[in-house]
Length: 210
Image (tube, rainbow, N blue to C red; front, side, top):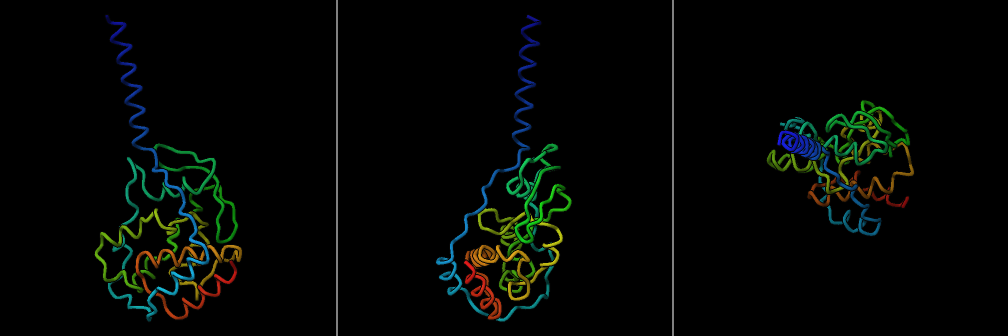
C-alpha cells in the first residue's frame, strides 16, 4: 500500500510540474502575414490624411504594456520566442536564442540586444488619433499580436527609429521597405489612425519597391 501511495504521489508531482510548465509557456502566435501591395494601396487610400496632433498628455504609461501571457511571462517574451530560433527559456523568460533584425539585417544572439518594436510607435499613434482612446484600447494597441505591429529587431535600429513615421525614418535595409510600408499601413488601417500628407507620400513611394 505504501509503495502504491508513493507511486501515485510521484505521478501527481510529475503532472503538477507539467501543468506549471504549460501555464508558463509563452503563447505561440504566428507572425501576421503581409497584406500585399495591392491591398496596401487600397488601404492607404482609405486612411484619413490630417496634420499630426499634439503630444499634450502623452506618456508611455497611457499604453499599458507588456501584458502577461502566462506566469512570469509577457508579450515581449512571446514576440522574442515567435521571431527567434534556438530559443532558450528560464521558466517563461527568454534567456537565449538567435534573432535576425529585419531593419538592418543584423544577427543577434543576446536578448538584451533585442528590442520589441511597435511598427506604429506609441507616440505616433497618440498624434494620429489614439489620444482619444481610453487606456484599455491603448493597451490593446500596444500588445497587438494579431496585426503586424510587434517585431523583434536590433535595439540600435529601434532606437534610431524612435517615434518617427516613414517620411522621417526608413529601415536601413532597403529590402524591407515594401514589407515595412505594408505593415505600417495595415496597422494604421485597422486601428483607424490618420497619416500626414508627407507620411502618405513616403508610404506610396515605399510600396513602389514591391
